[in-house]
Length: 221
Image 1 (cartoon, helix red, strand yellow):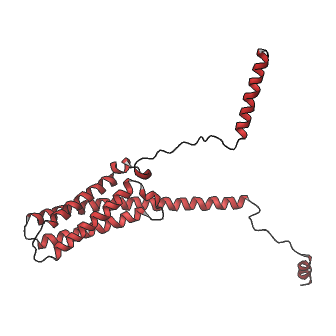
Image 2 (cartoon, rainbow, N blue to C red):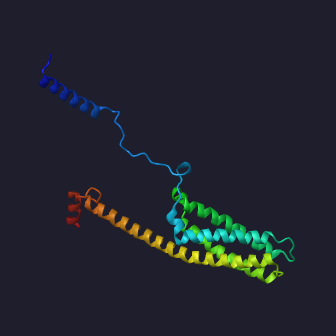
Image 3 (cartoon, rainbow, N blue to C red):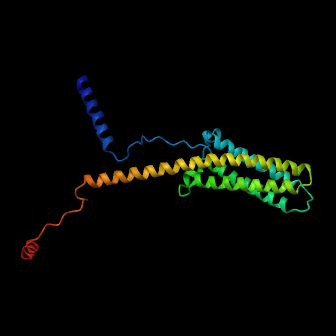
């Protein structure tokens, strides 16, 4: 029988051997954390955006455009109908486009498509919606027949115009900040690249040595 010291030594050697073999084994246990998916297919809601000014304005715009569209759809008879049709088109288009942008921003889907300038897209949408809602509301107010649905549509049309106007102002400021930040990043990147070129002599332009033939040519001249 082996003594206790021999057994302890054998166990120590076995443990060290197992540690070495485990370190050299290609099948190493991963230590990377498993990403937890939230929502459907990894989608997650951004509560900070919905709590912010732009998120609240987007929700208000969708609600106001939907109510204005519902009010204009309840009108059964009209004469003339051009103003009603124009208001219907504007309210429906604003509801659909703004609703899509709200879903993109609230679920951070715009981060998966960085090729699109989303700040500029939001600015164009809010600017056009402000102008079109304002014109459509004025035309409908001028041509209305004092019906309850028409008056309600005009009121919600002007409310939507105000919401889109405030969003346009905030979108312009956000777009200017993004442009300045992009220009600053480009300037820093250019300075960094120039410093790298100066610090690496192999990249610098090498001076060509003067040949003896050229020296003789200049002496003869």
